[in-house]
Length: 420
DNA sequence: ATTAGGG
DNA sequence: CCCTAAT
Image (cartoon, rainbow, N blue to C red; front, side, top):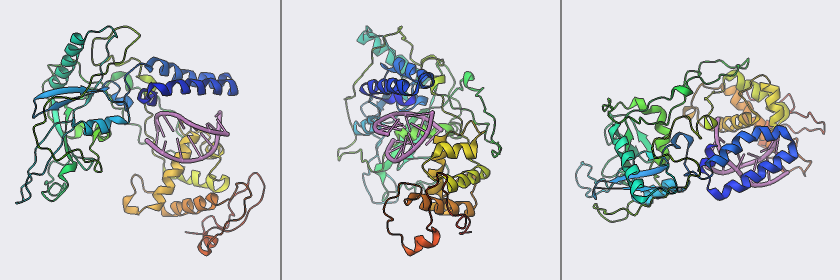
């Protein structure tokens, strides 16, 4: 659903087609499973594409150009948002004027502000649209804004950090420095509090069930007093802003100087076939609400990882359905896709330095097994009997050569744990 | 419904 | 985790 919102319209048709094909091929079960999604698809078919669900209420980008004292609204199709923002100069940009002393000198061309979702009927007049936008802007301003800082695409939260420590120096990449205007308050949608929490698998050491899904809804009532611009309050929304963060590899500042005037941004308001909604911050429980609720994060526990490794060692890396059943048969919240993804991250985790790993540390012993199993199963094992490609000596050591055509082939048990 | 990969 | 193209 989220993705649908982000999809360009022309991608919708194929989607529906797939669905139909899938239904005819897999029966009503598939039909019902996908109906929900497709219905949503249909509803959002004419909506303004948006990057993430959490931002689906802000599909247009309002940018303030300080220098020109003008504001512009742009609506860019998904993937283009970041580029458009930066490319259009709608983002904060900084220039290094002089590299003499230890002072960092720069100018802010513009600020990046949170997205804004505008929903108006087709027969809306330009004039009323302008007013609507103005209201939206006033709403944002009324709710209070705080300044966020981005360096090299990463948000800088530590206010105590010196500019130098943050990598902001006359010699640093001032081009990657950006500022954003963010709402200082993020009311939480009450309807989202009671998220269903499936039964935990026998392995799950539950402790991560407290996080509430962040709400994209912004305060509609303006007169809210500018609450304390605490950095921590927006922690959970950082990712959102990362989306809008400047790309280090995407210089946005042409050798021009400050004063940028006029707005080349355009306004694109998709026609809404349904009822008219002059109001800006859309009703919380509308189209893209429940349907797109991101699942609560459930980090795999060590026990789960062990179960997964165990299963993969036996089944390989191409039968995630089976792996899921074997290792998480009773963990409804772990789908075979989840399991497959977890293996992917495990392989990655095992490949990086321990210092770079995050979350509950996974015993090295398990990570070793991950790597071994990964290697083993990625080299023509359990797969078609292709010509035995060359295996280096090292591989021979770690990956014992052995195979049988049985359907339940597995890694030679001798290997399991050989790398402790 | 599952698989396989990119996001 | 999400989203999807292919099976």
